[in-house]
Length: 333
Image (cartoon, rainbow, N blue to C red):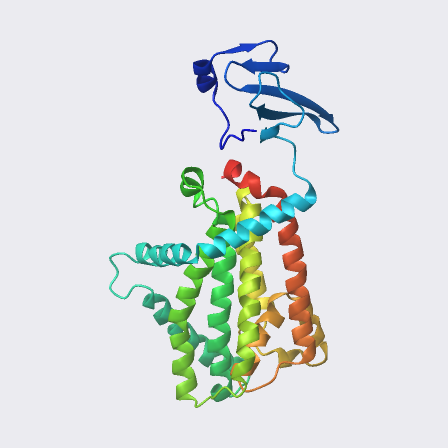
């Protein structure tokens, strides 16, 4: 039995000599025997190419090209293999993410630290203004605001760049064989590097007001949850953005609304008895899981449950769409 490592071209088959009786019938060659088999299924005729070493094709020949649609379980397995393949190429994704930062700030003196400076200016301006408007103590409000703005900056940038994750890498997708989820990993690493530069703002503000995190160990599960949600959000928006090009402005408008709805520049305690409404905001529990331990408080059990529930829902929708449309990304971009 012979299994070809690739599909035979018509030119190669001519070199061996062949006699074709019917386009969808039996195809004979002098050296190898090939056959076309048409399978009638609900979705139409499916062609399966088989090969054997005899002069006449036998029924137990091995398939060379099988064009039958994958079953749902096979689609999930293919999606899981794509994700595993992407993690095996983590050094490549890290290099590409760092290259994106270098190319974005090529020729700049300060580079990514311009974002740090702009964040410091925003924290100082908004901190003094909103502390007076909301009648809050600047000593307690400024660390809260600096941490919130840095975390929201990461979420907002990730969401705004998400729809272009695959569209911007169209040339690489068309020219190189890489896992689809590898481009998602590249985008996450790029935004994590930007976040690392903005952490300097938090360190400076915390040092000025003598704020010491008391529950630092809770940052580890919260950080893992952030990474998981970042991957799901980028992958979901990347798939939808590759198919529909109207998604980027829609996401940008939605993130502007969520910036004022989510407790970023105002404390959630201001809602008093209606604070439970914030649990429907998918970003509020995620931010609280990181913000509360760094400010010296413990997130409530309800916050963790809401964050996990939003994460499960997000990953469920993402996996369904990724397994179903993963193979179409190259045709959409």
